[in-house]
Image (tube, rainbow, N blue to C red; front, top):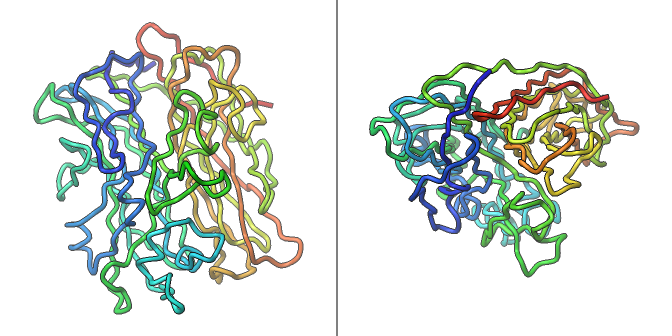
Length: 421
């Protein structure tokens, strides 16, 4: 069993909000060792991720997305990190502001002349990389040093326009100034060597933004990103009921670390996905005695389409209802970001009626509220969308894996987990 020390995280501090930085000025005792940032840097959402002309320039000028503060960090401590960043290629629906399917105020509109009568429609390949690294402040780039993990360069194209990398870490990291505050930051670098790339071209960073003066159906606005925070204190306290697009979570252990063995399952609760309908609960795991525990999840599902080959989304929810797709109680919590990818076949394009095959992985972590009582459930959702399909399409879950780890703080018993019926 792992035992969390009395590690300290400021209460969701250290994140970039509208250009202002909330520093970890004083260490605040916490009952657990989980720090999370699920609020994208506002300027990155508003301005997008710049596509540089080569990998060297991309390495010199990446974009910081998330930051988690680790107050009074020792010379060496063990951490487990999970992150998903929701980046997207500027597809035609993002470039054209009159297309109701795009994000309002998307930086793609200005970058590709979407306000003109003949906007550019990018078709060139972009290579992007997600990096996790140590920093001394939440706005600092890695500058080629102190990397903890990297996703590796991966392509993002008009056909594979949903580009959501996931990176996990389970290792000890060091602090060159023991006892000082340390930050774990996430950044994205992007480049293209295409002759059709122009200075100022961008990838879109999907973010949690809202316009307090807009109707709920049009509440998202990237032009002037007002961050939408979730689960503080409970989901219904905010203008729209939505989970976060991406997330960086850090579970912090002490220097004396003994790994907890994850509970591993392969149970598929419902293998049939509702294309363009509501999300499907493909996994549900029951938790007992979970109050106060930090729970980590890591799930991968494989999707097989027949006449379906477009977008697949996946996310996690902690809830009191094994069938719930969204929060139903004040102690319910979104656990993860909402990773998305294109589920393509060998000859699929952005609007082809082909058959796709893919897998999608989603990780997350949550501190179970101390007020939670009775059994709780970890539900993994999958949602599939496609606007160009032949008659009678289908999408099914063909295989999956699920790992659940309970990390109890000192003096608290570890939770137990079993597949829900």
